[in-house]
Length: 150
Image 1 (cartoon, rainbow, N blue to C red):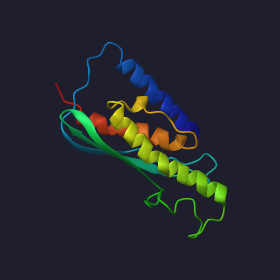
Image 2: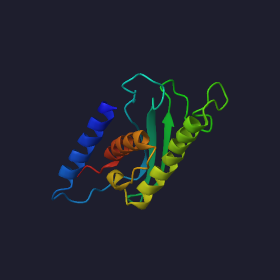
Image 3: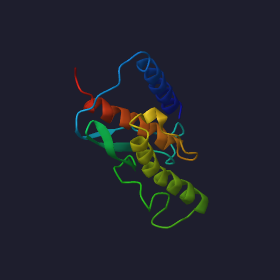
Image 4: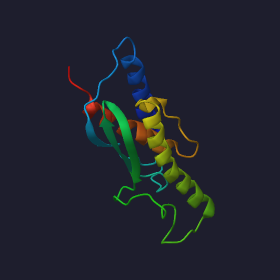
């Protein structure tokens, strides 16, 4: 958890510095994909382990589409079965929390498109803050690939 908070703080600091007196960023059209670092809880528990992948499509120099998907460390997509144990809901509260985090992925992607492309203007969703950090990291990495070289 500490690593994720440190990474998030670093990302915010860099974003704040890069915004001071800089010209607007221009993007090349295309589809760009990036992955966040793997997140592992400090206690080694399974809750929250994994990484996220962002795919961003830029058309006319602006973000026209974005998807964000999270995965467990073994590469299993976190979808409708995320939070289940051996295919069934063993702990309803845990399952509901896991599914809230899965649902937040789509909301983060939508917010990025609506925000004009600034990952740091996307609002974190309570109960999905690990996903938020993964989203911001992966989105910034994808957008860095798309930046026009002047």
